[in-house]
Length: 134
Image (cartoon, rainbow, N blue to C red; front, side, top):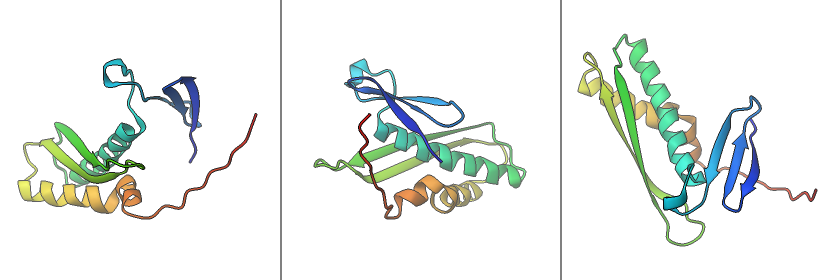
């Protein structure tokens, strides 16, 4: 898996995957933002990852999913690196036939067992960098 981020402006990058799908990364002040910051994208990635898993598990059990919203809220450290210390996902499901117990069980599994983004947040990842001057 690979993405390439390219500078568009002082506080703005465009990230592209090998298929050509683009995401705007925007570090400007909130009132000037046109895209999400990298940390907001992390919350979005976590929400999306867990949501896909949850919907698939519900559908596998032949449950109707009329809608699903996930609100992700993160608390970050004050000092650098300003990593997340806590992240809360709130799943809001519209389904006429999924029970609350089933929803809670599957939501927990989606967010803690199957979501690869959550799995990455729960472990120590070796990351490296290389500096190349063009």
